[in-house]
Image (cartoon, rainbow, N blue to C red; front, side, top):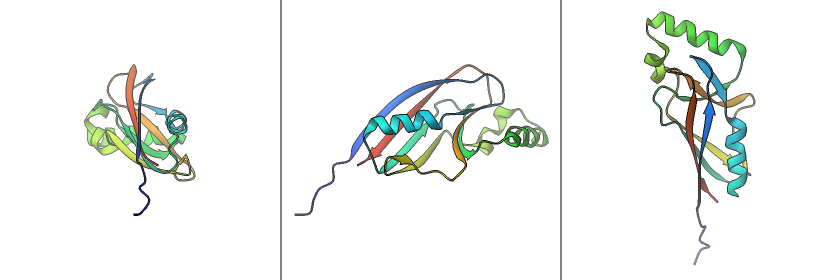
Amino acid sequence: MANMVKMLNHQRERTFSTTAVPDFVDITGEVQIILDESGIANGMVTVFSPSVGCPLIANERESGLLADIQTAMARLGGSPRDGSALIGSNSIVLPAVDGKLRLGTWQRVLLVELEESGPRSVIIQIVGE
């Protein structure tokens, strides 16, 4: 009989504070800490924002990003919240490889505030071995 691999599941909820509309909060470090706590080396990390007005993206955190999104929203003629589906998603899935988030060289996990600044809940679930 082949060796059976037991899949592990680890879930945590964290609250992050946004200070403006729009705003970008880099949550990469906290997601990595939760991956470290999980003991899971290889698997999938799902990051979920229950608020439709606060999507997630994996992108470079660079100074022009906020300005580019504000310009795009102005061109579309809507409020930032109207464009939340264009900017990100309520969840992203990232690979965990050898205990580390597998992101591009400059990529970060960003929580994007488009509605109203304040505390925002994020759920991180890790499944793997």
